[in-house]
Amino acid sequence: MKTTPWMIIVAALVTSLASCSQLETLSSLTTPDSKKEAYARWNKVRGRLKYQLAADSFAAGQLDKAQEHLNETIALNPNNPDNYVLLAKLLLERGEIASASEAIEKAQENGGSSAEIDYLNGMIAQRYGRFVDALYWYQQASTRETNSAHYVAAVAETLVALDRAVDALALVRSRWTDFEQNATLREIAGSIHMMLDQYEEAADAYQEAARITTDDVLLKFKLGEALTLAGRYEEARSVLITAHDMAKDTPPSALVLLGRCNLALERNDEALEVLQEAAEKGPNNPRYWSWLARAALASHDLLTARRAANQTVAIDSDNPHHHMMLGFVCMRQRDYEAAVASFEKTLQDSPNDRMAQFLLAKAHVAMGKPATALAYDLQQAQTHTSVGQSHQGSGSRESSLIQPTRQGHKRSVGRPRAP
Image 1 (cartoon, helix red, strand yellow):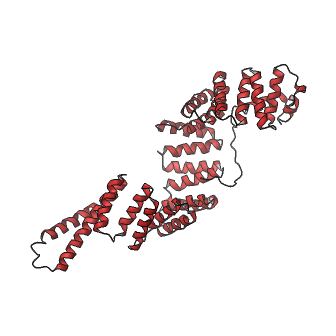
Image 2 (image 1 turned 90 degrees about the horizontal axis):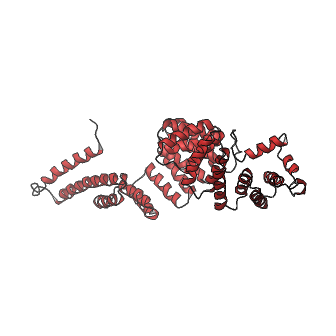
Image 3 (image 1 turned 90 degrees about the vertical axis):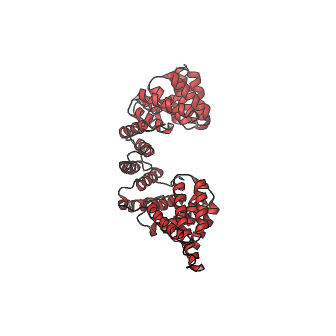
């Protein structure tokens, strides 16, 4: 039969109770020192019992109850370092960093020395923004307890915070095979690859993590994003649909990814439906409305496209790309005056934008004004499109406003973004 900590405590408690029951009958035969020792043993047993109650309450998120039990166990057994370690964890959970630091010092004063104490020291240093110190303590914890992926992950995440993403990636990869069934390190590797714009590698790492943790919805959304940015739209769409079905409430950012995949795969009506949902969930995000405008254009729903483009500009009027999208929608509706106004606004902020120059010239021509009289000549703008024939080129350039490229792209590795 498997022995549990509770069984040990109960057995000790029964033994101590038996001892205490005999205390009075033996009082005439015992010395004051033996009485003191008996009471000390009894207090230690009670202290262990209260400690277990405190640990269980903490694990259940009942912080007040855990604090109450901890106060009792510290009073009963003030020299046990484990009491102060648990107290430090509780205080960190409450955000009382200075008090947590004092608790850890108390644990060390009472002989505490463990990987967990090192890790908590790292957490305290991290909360104070002392990442170099945090790295030291996390490395100490990882050295003491080499079979803990959690400590390796802490080291890697701190390296990223210190702008050492490449070193973090090397560390995670070097310990990869040590934890074959651990998804955490693979997920961290995927996140670092994403920071470095290495989308193919990120997708592969996330796929490894998802193979281990099959029911993690958030991980599936991360995988879907990496696959989308890598241009692997079929795979991304499948993953995102699965995650969407699993999630209680799919975030609008994930819906946009699914919409982008549908657009790239020319499933325009499906893209329109999912991007409408994204815009409804995130009505103040201009990016969601911009993608909805693209999907509506692809589905020839010009009314929805105009409404979405207007909303994009209303939310973020300083972005020239939003004005160009609105102008393009107006062109499709043959509202050339509004289109001209939008393209001119684009060119105020981006005077060298060849696409805006081309579309502005085209709008003027549609209004019956000669292209040669314009500041941005139609023929010149077509030349700068750098695509074959002018008719084919204009269609290619305009369609880029609607659909994402079907090929993935990899930008060069540069300075990683802050986590």
